[in-house]
Length: 442
Image (cartoon, rainbow, N blue to C red; front, side):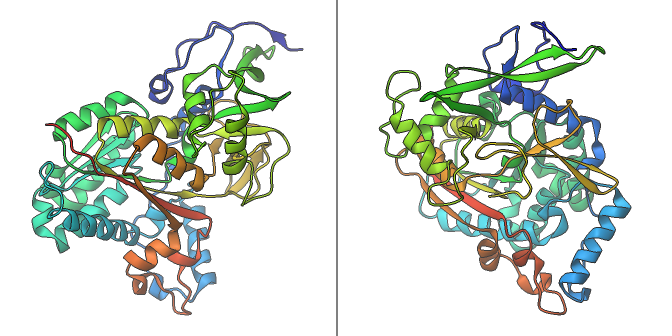
């Protein structure tokens, strides 16, 4: 029998929760805080979750798709990891493709924009994983653009102190003192204004390239639900389970949270929506239906539930405020298979046991027991970025395969049969690029 009570909860320990500055309540917290805490427990208690390869894969020796899939299954089985990112599977090719994109844009801008010291290439990566992408990018620049490398600076913002240390070790091991002098990994959350403010001040202005690969899918989201024509925000309230543990249950309240409001308003590209609860919700509803409820894309979900990317909104706001001249490149999944949670943009909640995925139908699972990851609506992301970045912002969205066809060396990832997993696997991924060039004062 469940015993319901208001639990005096300690302040959440994850920096994501602190960065999003939720209004506290002794009887619960917003969904984004619950998810952020659950993910922090999941990754913090399972260092093996973030997998790494001992050496790059030799795609040219693989027979074809079957050989590629056999090799991946073999790696997963032997290493016992939950997943490998494309940057790991296709190292160094993903990193080299991104490095080509960055260097080409950097060199093309040096003669056009005299704001800041354009001789310096500054890169910030959000969530650096094992440091593989950073090492691959720095390797490429040092080999192919030594003059750019001389004044290159690469910084990672990562919430995990243990991963920060792992990143430093990998980058130094790969490039020695040369890389180590140009690389730093800071234990900070990209959703916080302070992280971007400190970074902007240390670099003193100029253009910055910001990278985020498979970051959006693990960012905390909020849940809103439409009831009787009004949008309600969702809180998680906790109950004792009779054995000293807790169970969470959803509670709907009128939308009051500022970040939820701004995220909803950011979807209204026409700029005509009013704030929730002020009697002018038609614009917001129309906008959310266009961007999130499936118009022009996937079929609409009839649950009236939307998962909003509020942590992504916070990152866009704080990046644009503190480093207004930047290029943001994000790669992630635009849809996920086998999602059992109801709602548009709903997460896949999954745990891997003995290499077998076990999916849940709710995000209210025991803390740390499951990964919770979300698809990204890239059309909505572009609208959010354009609204936050303001006049002059430019955005492009494309399939990852198109990006790699333009910037990667495809001969090195082609198997014996002609099958190329870099552009034929991970077909549910896209790349977003947002660029804003504004003069900054030193």
